[in-house]
Structure formats: C-alpha cells, structure tokens
Length: 567
Image 1 (tube, rainbow, N blue to C red):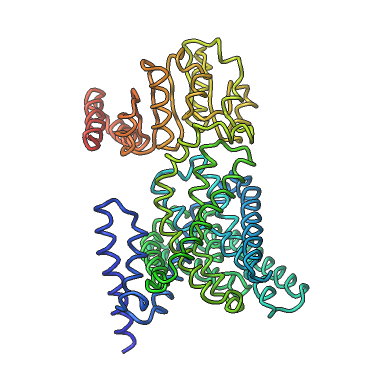
Image 2: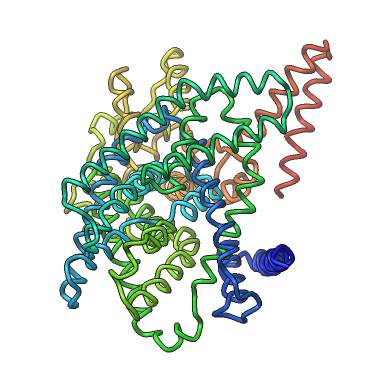
C-alpha cells in the first residue's frame, strides 16, 4: 500500500536522522551535517534504503515553506528598515558581482551565454536556512556582521523571483522580452496586492480567531495564512518559499507575531530537518568518487570566489575588517534556492551532464562546510586584523577614525556599543558629570549619537590599537554592551593585555556566555537573561509584601544558582 510505503520511508529517514545527529552532538559536530549524511545513506544513490525520494522531497518543500515563513515572522518591517543599507546596497552588489564573475568564468570554459548566466544565478544565492540557523545558535543575529549577512540573504531570496522569470528566456523557450517584462510586472503587482491585503485583513482575522481562545484554531489559521499566501504567490510565478516569506512578514506586522512564531516552531524544525535529509539524497557517492577532482575544484571556486566577493562588498560599504571577514565566511556557500532554480521546468536543458551533477555535489558540500566556516570565522577575522593591507586599501581602519580628543582623558569610562544599554549608560554618566567615550561600529547608532552630541567614535573594540587610542590604559572602567559573544571575549583579552588592572564590566545576553567571558579576564559579567529572572522575582515578591531582607536572600540564591550551573 502506498500509505504504508510512505510511512516506512518516513520512519527510515527520521530514524537515521535521529541516530546520526545524536552521534554528531556527542562530538560537537553540526546537526545539519548529520541530516545531510542521513540523506546520503538513505537515498537511492547511497545505501538504497529507500528508492522513492520524491515523497521526502515533497515534505522538504513544506519544510522550506515553513522555514521562510518563520524567517519572515522574525523579520518585521521595522527591523528590515534598520538593515536597509546591507539589504539593498550590499545585496545588490554581492548578487551582481557573483553573477558577472560566474558568467565570465563559465564563458572562458566554453559555455554559451545562456547557461553561463544561469550558472551565475545558481551561485549568487547563499543558504538562508543554514546561515540564519548558525547565526541564531551563536547569538550573532544582531551583531554587526549578522545584520549585514541577514540583509544580503533577504536580497538574494527576493532575487529568486526575477531569476525564475528570466530562465525561460535564457533557455530560448520564452516569448519576447516584452512578454517577460509583462510577466514580471504581473508578479510584482500580485505580490503588492497580497502584502496590502495581508496588512489590512490578516490582523483582523487573527484578532477574531484569538478571541475564541482556541489554540488549535489559532495554529490552523496561522498555517492557512502561510500556505494560502504561498499558493497565491506561486500562482503569480513566485516560488512557494518566497510566498511563505511574504506571509511571515504580514503576520510579523500584527500583535500576534510571537504567539505565531512559538506555535510554528515545532512544525518548522521537523520539516526543515527533512529538507536537509532530501538534500543529502541528491548526492551520488559513486559519482562523487569518480569526479572528485572537478567537484573539489568547483567547491573551492565557489567558496573562495563568493567569500572574496562578499568581503569586497562589505569593505566597499566601509564596514570594519572583522565584520567583512565574518560576513564572507557566512555567505561563502550556495543555498537551497539553487535547487529551486535548477528544478524550474525551463532549466532542464541549460546545464547538461556531467557539469550539472558535479555542480549539485559542490553545492551540497558547500552547505555542509558552512557550519565549520561559521565556527572558524572569528579566528579568521582575528588573523586578518593583524595585517594592515586591507585597512590601508579601503581606509576602513577603525583606529584612524578616533579623534585626538581622547588622548588627554584619564579615569574615564569606555563604553563599547551604543545600543539601548549603551545609550542609557551614557545618559547616566553625563547626568552625573562623569567623563566617558563610546566606541561603535553601527553607522546608524553613530549618527544618532552624533546628533545627541555624544563623544562617539567608529572603532572595533576587539582591536588593541583602537583600545589604546580610547585610552584603555588610563581609563577607570571599560563597559562592554554589544551582542556578539565572540567579539566580547576578544575585546576582554585585548584589553587585559593593555590594562591588566582595568575593571571590565560586560553585559551579555545569556548565562551560558558568562564562563568564557570571565575566563577571558572580565571583572564582572551581567547576563540579561539572569537579571530578567531577578526582576521578575522582585516584582512578584514586592507585590506580595515580602520583607526586603528575604527578597535579597532570594535574589542571591537565583544568581548563585545560575553561576554554579555554568561552573
């Protein structure tokens, strides 16, 4: 029976996935690599445990749809406005340069213009699924390189729409350029209508459903919005995944965004895991062994070429060297939308064998090494910072931006970061008549500070030169309030080499970040997660008229318990 066969295949892939990923976790290897390996083993080109991979691919498409819906939920319009520069400028430059570079290389190897341009489309897109998950797990979404990376990824995803519409024209199966332009206009019009209708209708529908207080009905409605918007967008020639992303943006604009995100996560995690398993099924181990040389060359060309292009794009936008290197490592792969492009009906004849098979293998391998690149990115950035070559070429050396007015300062406070915490601290120090100086990498934050007359400077606090120019050796205290745990560690170590006795206070997000930061040399670490727990307890106990002495005992117990938990 087909139903039993389907369930059998599902049990095989889920069982392999659970076993391999559990084994990988013991050796601290990325879960994505385990899912891809499970797909390789289960697929018809691996051990042949299941012959029909179409069923799993169908589930994986649902997974990608839910994944993009979740990404849209996590990126409301106000957040997109904050990253508009990397989204529009950085994304455009990266995609354009990737397509042109691939086109030139492919043409030099004998491919005609149509297939060469199609190869450029494939290579230009990075993996939103893998990169965002990696950044989220490392707590780097809101770090400077995280914001730049997210902006470029969103632009890449949006570019899939015109790319799909152009493919028939490249294959010679489309009408005139006017027909292509009309189709594009039609698609954009329908997308605009979907967004407009969603922003006016969806909040009202969700409010009506929420009033019923039936959680299962709310979950069904959220899934209906996700899949319905995706289908409507697909009818306009847009991919299902991108339609789901638009649906996520729509729901993100409502007050029910957080509940929708919480309800969709269990579905998303299961189906996304199936997506990575289906990616592994695309790999033919025997073909990879026979064509190992060409595949390795393609893989190296993709990773090195894209990394250089992303690095150049970031430096062109005058981002710091550390941000440029870490963004290059994050975006050096080819992503899941490449399979959407290669699966388009008109794309089948553009790239023939064996190039298509070798390119598929190289793409999957590039996705497989991405978690390793993300893990290695901080070390690569630290090594790159020791050279003066790129800062001199692009004039991105942060320490040159710091004014001479810092030099005579003594017993001042250095504030690393000008987010909400940095702004509140700066205001408090100013009100109390204490001298301070601020270092920041975010241009928007610098602009806000300049408008307020703050002593802010463009500088990377992980750089020893920047810290020296900020007067770390003469300062009274260094307060770090940025959202990049690895950068915090490096900043603390660099400061300790310059000022061994300086008091270093660090605000971090999570309790689990405390141990490595304290080990690096911080004097105090205040995790926002822990202080939120203390604040919740304080408000509850105060409302129940608990004595201040007993309250302090409970606060100390909470803090001590968390500290012992990370020891």
